[in-house]
Image 1 (cartoon, rainbow, N blue to C red):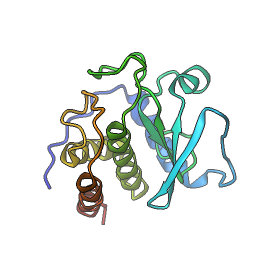
Image 2 (cartoon, one colour):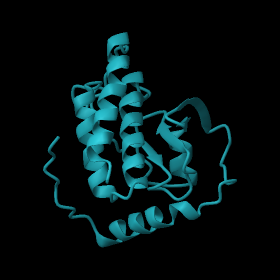
Image 3 (tube, rainbow, N blue to C red):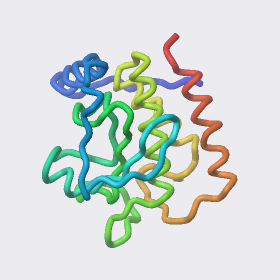
Image 4 (spheres, rainbow, N blue to C red):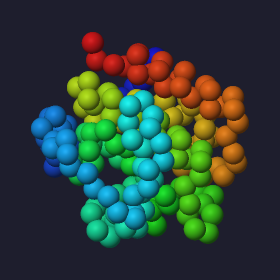
Length: 179
């Protein structure tokens, strides 16, 4: 698997903040846990707790720039064993084909979830966010749950698609995991 990494042209503040959060992640309080009606448990997967979170509540109360998903190696308030996925697309989202409530579809949820898990695992193994994020984006494209990551798809997942997801995820993780 080859990926031509894009140059990181973002402000250095973002790069530095991400590096600090990633470096200090192992120091997090293992008993720290945020809960409330804004956070709903979905399932356990790959040893992680998966939550659907209320996008608007998060944006209004914790992080104004919250997007579609996150994990504890990028956001300091998310425990390391949790992945959070939005329940709706943020109002500023550039995604097309959204329903009137901007809901996240099953396909979008699963695609974002695989992205977040792979990105998290690569960062846990020491890869910087910028590279882990690009690898996760490439994997999302190859998963094929969304024809285009910026076009929502409300059709249901087929059993064949569900089965192939894990195979593709494992191939990416094994190919890119730092040695």
